[in-house]
Length: 373
Image 1 (cartoon, rainbow, N blue to C red):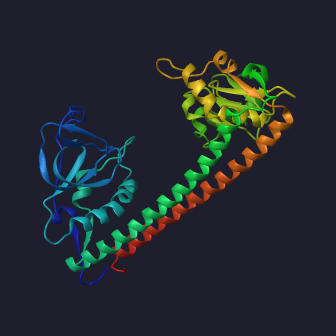
Image 2 (spheres, helix red, strand yellow):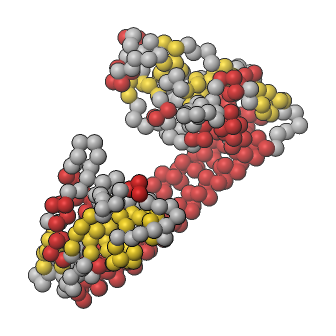
Image 3 (tube, rainbow, N blue to C red):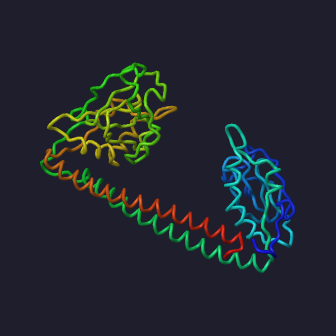
């Protein structure tokens, strides 16, 4: 930090108070914003504040900072920073808090189950305060840099979206335009569930990985946080599956959780281990049927129920579709696999680019508030 910079506590450069209203008292037909720690807005007919303020989430999205100028109310767990002293620019303070507060709070690990910010953390939070001309220069540089970073993010996201749409378009066209020699089939005619529920407490299954719906990522074959039956201390019955099956989660079908496992293991009773019938349908074609928009819409219609939407076996196996010969299935799958692979590669590039851009943002912030821009 430069010699002519000061360091001040947050309480020395602005006033800090909390909202008083209960979150459930917001009136959706009102006129003014009602801020909560989740950053969701309802509205109230009466307002408690009319000012320029930085609003800090004390729990929920802990440490998130937003700017507002006007009439508003806030939930009591939201901190209101206002009445800023002449020695600080509101935008400079906003940028600094946005870059450092959340990271600092996360290290505090306050709260057993839900992290939160104590008033003392905010009042004592150290703020670098350069001369006002320097603050203006830093704000200008950061705003311009962040605008370019956001533009780069938008471009990367657009490219990924285009790739996904290309895959989706071809996948939907396969089932929307069946060939003349394709045969009408039901899922019950082309696949079956041969696995029976087993006791995961038996030693034979200790070291097998278990897949639950929570391990499956929507509209993706990615599996996360897998653990063995022993590690999870499983008690209730589970299905055995192998590399010939397609796993379909019957819970909330709109999530489109379908995977082709490359290992033998156990799966939750809320997952159907579907085994393709030999010489009728190949495994990968079955996978793409279950991933298609047409099937998903069918599954959603049949899963409407109170509480947790689920697809029952009868409805699943009654699904009707057109099926080509095995040789054509292989040709279609080859194209779909290639498109899916390219989409996954682009998604990897996109995620890395986002990580790089976030690192660039952190680097620029670090230099800015260390006086090294």
